Image: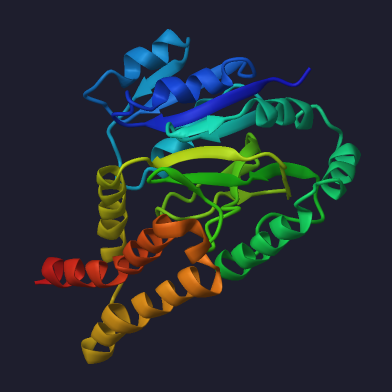
Length: 284
């Protein structure tokens, strides 16, 4: 019988961690948590659930600690989560089923997915952006999970936000984080499939939390851009934000997500000029 490790990297997650761990306690044979020296009750909550806890320095690139959690996992299959994510009962049952499948059974399961075409279109976009994900000639070593993002009282299904596929179910030693960028894709040595049921992401229940998370991403973007002269100013302050808003709100129909769709598109577009001005301030 295949066993499952649930692995997390945490930092001051006492408000979210309990619900996350409660959602996986029935399917996890092991819980591994790498904590970035939290100052709240995160570690105590983790230990309530019997987690193996390793306390390390916090990192701006959170994937560094996520990789440590993968390295500390004992089982072949690992479900990597964030503390603000929830595994539904249907997803939990699907995970338990998939990790027991043979490679042939996994191939047949992929053909049965009701959202297969949507998932493959999304994966093609990721391939175009990040480079080819996985190796189609190998056996299954990882699975995307569609993620449903909660934003200011509404689950976003438009604006290019859904299915927000994230590779979270992986085989140990066949997946790793490069740990160079906040938005990087985990690297998989093997074929990557999809699960059908959504991972619930309680990303931004309040605007304050959204601004805090958004500000951290902007700080990282500001360290990775090199705008030059007048064109750099026009690109990051005018062109990129206008393009992003039109793509998410109009082309991908963010307006169907009501006012939350507008707020999401508008403020996510603003990350470009905000990153530009932080870069300029830092570079002086």
